[in-house]
Length: 351
Image (cartoon, rainbow, N blue to C red; front, top):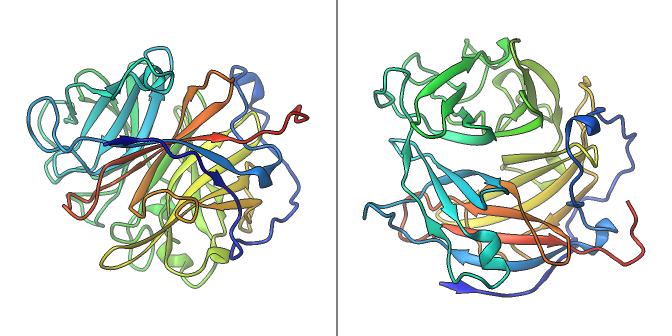
């Protein structure tokens, strides 16, 4: 099913008040080529809901697809990659999104799935549960959630984008590793991954580390090429209420800010979701607070399990889009949604 529904995402009455924090941003602009602005201007203008797509439940091989937990878009190839957290994790490319938005195609074109494998070409012994994705050339960086076991630890790896084979693995921060009363909780991260610059990765847990329970802040960690990942402050999400989780991150180095995709679920299937804007700052001992947030479900997105966030194609009017994808949890009660958002910008905006 393909349908259009232009809408505006604006702040709901229950949104946290914007706070004017010092913008001690990372000086990463030189490492990132100029690109169209991603954020609304002014921020209160919100987002336009450009397109909502329901992806098919079967791939080219006739087998079920789903469980999409992360996304990354290649502009030159007009190719969207989705990462599945299926028991045998895989990457799947989808072509033609820019053409579809320009009216030159009626649907996305799925490509063959790329199964994720060990360096020896074998299936992962206990599943990978990939949750975050960054593409760099012919390789894909992936963070996977762990189960606090030697058989299935949390990890940060890179794989060949063609073969799916493991290329390398980077160690997680010591504070994230499993120890009595410490580290990531079971199935609680790492949950997201974004690039500050080539080879410079930022990841986040889904919930506070075990040793941080009772205190605000979802832990961030930064992994630079050749070095141990280090703690990188935290994000405070308490203003959104209880039982929320961070599901993806998108660094905006040009704007020196960070977009977070946040969800809350009450079972069986009652979903809430927000986009939350934070300053992109150097590590600090205290948690960063939201600058702005937008309620996605109130704005008209399907109430589902939104897990993936990526930049998307540039529209004909020059606006850079955002892409959001949902994880259907392999349930017939949910769907694999792909949504295209565009920032609303007033004529007098110059930044």
